Image (spheres, helix red, strand yellow):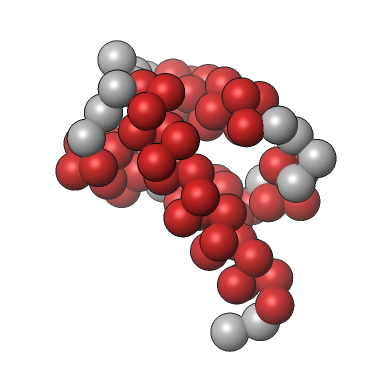
Length: 74
């Protein structure tokens, strides 16, 4: 596993409880959304951009990403 892969994984793991709290979702429900909309892959693709974005900015971006695909976090 490359250094970047480890850093992306760390970001994904840090975001899980933040998103669960922000969206008032259980980890199970959050996992379903992640699978359905490819959120973990999106975090990987946007990793560099997210490094210069605050947590709320990342949360808002991920919510917009899901909504653009017809989904909802509510």
